[in-house]
Amino acid sequence: MNYPKFFKEGFIVRNIKAEIIKEAVRELFIKANYVISMDLYKKLLEAKESEESEIGKNVLEQIIKNADIAKEENIAICQDTGMAVLFVELGQDVHIVDGDFNEAINAGVREAYEQGYLRKSVVVDPLFDRKNTKDNTPAIVYVEIVKGDRIRLIAAPKGFGSENMSALKMLTPAEGVKGVKDFVVETVLKAGPNPCPPIVVGVGIGGTMEKAALLSKKALLRPLDQRHPDERYASLEKEILEMINLSGIGPGGLGGRITALAVNIEYYPTHIAGLPVAVNICCHANRHAETVI
Amino acid sequence: MGDIISISAPLTEREVRKLRAGDNVLINGIVYTARDAAHKRMIEMIKKGEELPVNLNGQIIYYVGPAPAKPGYASGPAGPTTSGRMDSYTIPLLEIGLKGMIGKGSRSHEVIEAMKKYGAVYFGAVGGTAALIARSIKKVEVVAFEDLGTEAIHRFYVENLPAVVVIDSEGNNLYEIEPFKYRRI
Image (tube, rainbow over all chains, first blue to last red; front, side):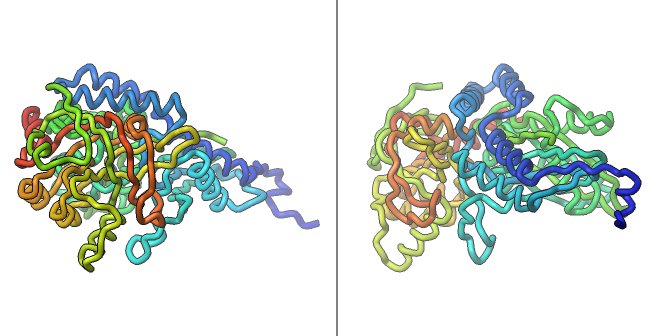
């Protein structure tokens, strides 16, 4: 028999059943909607201590109590259980068997939103047919092929109170660091009380238009106590956070010191003529959960 | 913070006119849910001269699309959605006697002017505290537009639903007053 070349050379692929992916996706979307991450929880506790405004403190207390209730009772933190955004890092030595990769993901989303008592918030067509798809599909999936034989899945359900306040701008290279700072702060000021502050701010700089947008969403996944490894970006993150927290918007938009819990920046090489900047604002729940198969 | 005021819906204009931006309230009685799709339908009905499926005179609308309730719960998580999306639909409802709105986020200048004119108040609930708020919801009935699912008009029977008066019937706006005190840029 004529085996393909890679078989003859003993190349090994790891078979993963589509069913395993479906199960993982189901569990992740339920978990992300019920439990906030520990780094975020700690930030909220710190924020409650340092907030100067009495109203602000009270709002933070309610937010923390809400997170506790959701976790204890296994119910959603927020009624807006979001659009199902899924980041996939797919090892190049993985072979998916017994089913369709995309269908497995959507089946996982469908089951999570049905079995987890999560709200179905997706409409068929944005403009002409705003009818609910009734199972929160389709998922929004970003696949990156990486080395190895594992699959890393990160579920990041995104509510639209904060998504609607996000923005993108193609700056000129001349606008530089100041242009970036001004645009991020301006976007947060414009959002005011709407995106459920205290917010987490994801910033994507560089690449192309859509690359910057994607980076800004990915930036939200980084732990909040972890600054960018490049010192220049790390200090830019701190500086923008300080500027935002001088805005006075405060928890719930009802005034105070803590408007944002963190600013996370990611960058990518870009064109000689460009400086794309995207700002993805996330609410105080900044939901995400991950697993490795 | 001041005392907590207990109010019971439906509201009279006199009660509404007494509320001030910054008052902490506990809302009792009936509130109706409506968000984008239900508002759109109601406004179309008003334009056609049709009677609305609920009489909104003196009532409170809560901008919310609840999540499904787990067995044993009266309501699923039900926190406020962004109110500004309802701005373009709000004035005709104030004209027919809507007295209160519960939501989160800013309102337009036009809506605030109409609130002053007709005597209405805008309550803020804390966005993203849906599991906590659901504890105040004791009974839920779908009363109109059932096909809209979560966006249908629900009648909530609430007990001590915590909220703050964000914009009062004189146009005082807590979203401007409070952040201004802490603003340093």
